[in-house]
Amino acid sequence: MFRLGLRDYTTFVMPFFNPLRPSYAEDPYPALARLRAQDPVFFSRDLNAWIVTRYAECSLALHDTARFRSDFLAAEGPRWAVARARNELFLGGVPALSAMAEPDHHRMRETVSAVFAPRAVQRLRERIADAVDGLLAGLAPGEPFEVMRGLAYPLPRMVIAEQLGIPETDREEFQAHADAIARAMFGGAEPAEVARASEARDALLAYVARLHANPEALDRSGALARMIDAFTGGALSQAEVVGLAVDVAMAGNDPTACLIGNGLLALLRHPDQIDLVRGEPALMADATDEFARFDSPLHALMRIAAEDVELAQKVIRRGEVVYLMVGAANRDPAQFADPDRLDVRRENRRHLGFGAGAHFCLGSPLGRLEAEVALCTLITRYPTLHLAGRGAEYEPEFEMRGPRRLTVAYD
Image 1 (tube, helix red, strand yellow):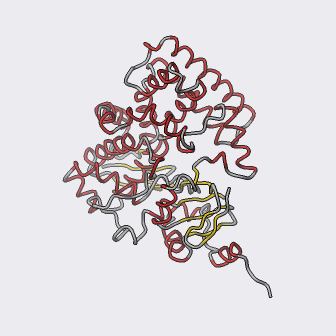
Image 2: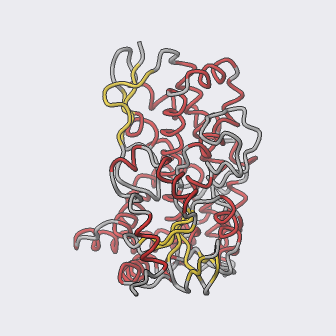
Image 3: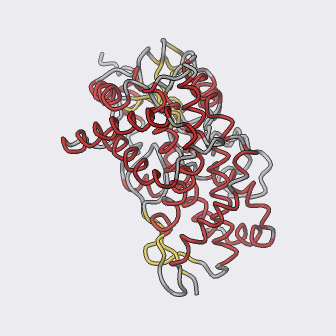
């Protein structure tokens, strides 16, 4: 008698789940809700990975760093072999903080954690407000304004350069080098891109050496000064300073941009909630947490099983890839009352939108503040703001969620 194996069975009964199709990108939540109800730990043959959709299992895995490693360099298969080679080539084998195992993760994170603490971040409020004002200068009555390109993406790039403490004269060049490395690491890595990234790596190594020789050139309250001090004291290598600097410069940009885009879209689609925040702007600080829950920018977090582990009665083998679907977990009715409703006054904010456990997002206080200032300015300064043209457009992407384009206008 023909018998289906477990993975054949789950694929057979769950044929509708394809996170790369355009309709999923437009609205993933119906498919995720079905998957969460019918097969919360599901093996996808299309992705060759496990898909975890319930809050309980996602939270457990995020907190269990011994059995669920965040280091993608430990994954098996040709895709990850390429990633390991690129990481070694461009960053000397130094993984991103979000993918780093202990004890290196703690050592690297502690170097810069004080700079991203809530109290330290609040000193940037006025600077962020000035940046938002400058970026919104092109928003004119009756004219379409593309929020992602015009505001959401440039804002965090401007702010993080200041938080790093890079001299203004060096910021453009430093960001160009970081961009080149990121493109080669995560893009197609055409020969020209590989060559540019290699040049960028050498330039950043030389830049770190110059700063090490002249530390007074840096803002002493910035993250880069702390990295240079750690290099001087032997706590970080030169390659680790470059890797950490690139990580800090790049890691929070896309999630923050998506938080701004998702938050604005959520408000414009829920007139009762936008009226609440307009009437009480102080609500926006808590509202950003609700946006991160309601439509999570970090939609899926990848983990690698460090050993054979049982999760919801399924056996995940060592080395297999696990996608923790944070977007689904944050709408789990077992954790949140009426989870598909946007509620800027929601009291339960124990969501997973910024991760959890040891890898809880280091830059979340900064990202929340940037979103708070940007969104509060948009909805209070332009009370007739509305979606325009095609409104929101999405790429078929499931790990990061946010509009590729978001067009608005005001009367």
